[in-house]
Image (cartoon, rainbow, N blue to C red; front, side):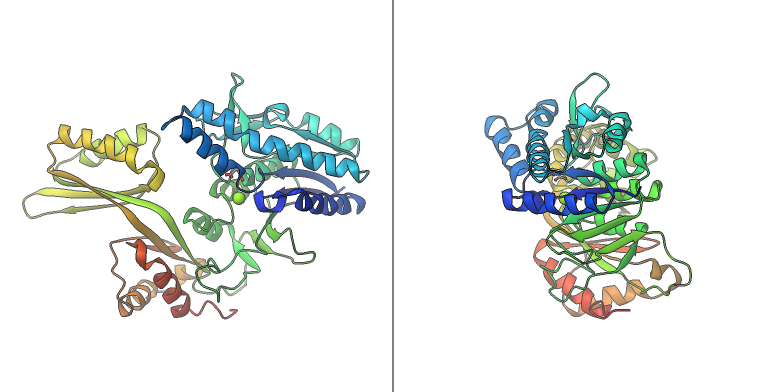
Length: 407
Ligand code: ASP
Ligand code: MG
């Protein structure tokens, strides 16, 4: 029997009507003879509400307690969806992450899945039940509740699809697929029929909020075909994320990603000698803060300026750490800027074409957008610009690379 993992995000289970809609769809799939495992997020806005509650009590709540709190959102939706299914005469059973035993490491609020026990799920499927699993949560060896990072339900779904060897992992969301860029920023953005794992990884990691990055990594690693589609639209085929197809001519650029959650930190006037980069970034990494772009420049006086970007949410923590390091290293000064964004063009097609970067910089220059940092990879070029230029930069690039036209 074909097995599908369905994942429904917060807006798709945002109220009782919507939960009933999801139940309809799942019931239909079940009636077609498909085995279905459903992963759900918390109702939209709930996780944010829980975060706000925590911060109303404590400025920096302990990550362990944060996870106990945040995991409750998904527990509500699994129960409600199971009830909605049962109400329709469709046998269903709900499980939290720890009931399944989605084993994770202990890095609270951004834990990684290590193992999933599928025995119970397989047994339920064999008995004809729909299995409804809470997304975003796991449990450590010691029995502590963990969460997988914001948007982590996608990862739960893909990980389950991988271990269960599902035919496809369907990610139902409030958009009907992956777009060339965020349509809220560029209304002429176009839905893509397919995109490669690699491109999606860049789009996701660069802040296109459709899918959590870890879920795409997982899907690529275990070759789980991933389809993003709308839970409100009956017959759309969404966007298929898979490996690059031989013989299919690729557009130069598939999309434009951006990330508003960036902040940048600079250490000025550090002595230019071996080991400096590692002394600056070591303590940041030890604090489990992810670093994105890095730029280092040597000045004439043999000192160097060292700039890197982090997630805006970790800016304060990174700044504190850096100020201490700065004293130890005898650096002149630490500076920071929280009002920056990153805009990137992404496409496997750029591998075989020169001149993409200059076309990008040229288009931005014509609109007077100042570029503060640049980084490149084989299939991506990113620039950091002031927050106020985000919309202008995205629209300019969308136009320059002709993305509103199907290729
Ligand atoms: N509810 C969690 C969040 O809002 C997980 C998810 O929706 O995927 O981030
Ligand atoms: Mg999501």
